[in-house]
Length: 80
Image (cartoon, rainbow, N blue to C red; front, side):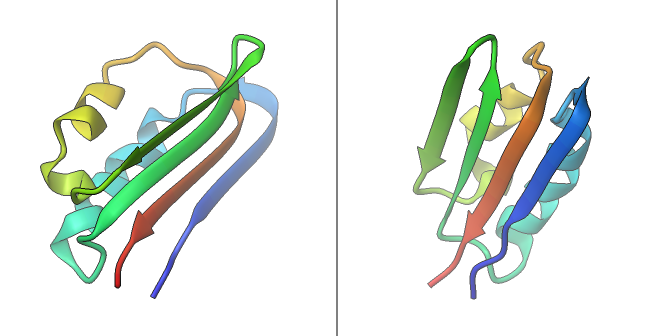
């Protein structure tokens, strides 16, 4: 099963709050096969795709410490 979370806002928002909840889901249930995040910030698109669960991924945890604001965000855990 594939699940995704999308965020589109009229105002700039920090995506760390929804991402924090995603970390727990992305590896503690049936979504252990990888994760991805895409967002648009600072005039450029950003894409990060990992083959490990978000819960156990160092890159996912470091995302929480980044100073990011965006209007558009897609989070996607993966499972087989």
